[in-house]
Length: 151
Image 1 (cartoon, one colour):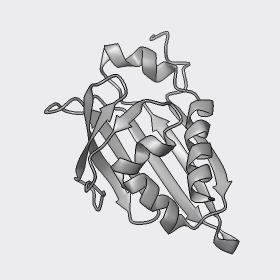
Image 2 (image 1 turned 120 degrees about the vertical axis):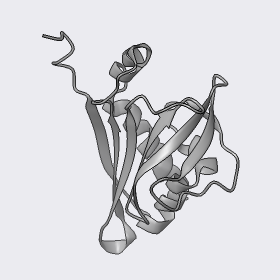
Image 3 (image 1 turned 90 degrees about the vertical axis):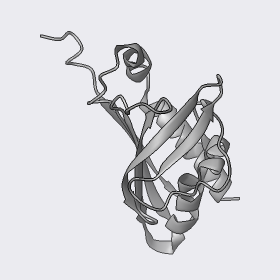
Image 4 (image 1 turned 90 degrees about the horizontal axis):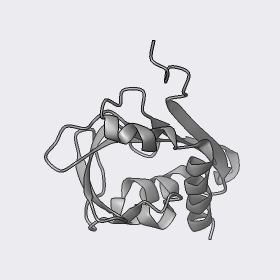
């Protein structure tokens, strides 16, 4: 039996943000905006003009350490949900996933849920980092997103 079976492989955080879902979705679905709200300080930059529009889209992001990731969009509902699987350029995604879900509430507020799912991660070298991803790290991105949207 794998000694890692007791580790939570799906990490999530949620919060209400005093901004409409469509405004928040624009900040998430436009990769050039993502470094502005990344609470892990892991995202360096993404070229403008990569706004995600559908499952199957791929956007590139340069991480703060310099490597580039191609992010393969695997879930997409305009204004409501987006998820992608990062991969090294030209390679298949190793199995982890980042998801954002937006639920419009009354008074122009939105409940935003951010999920990191590494339940299908197969690449041994990424497991240490995956295990170290906490709900607090996801919450930091939610806080920054809220700060940008509520200005």
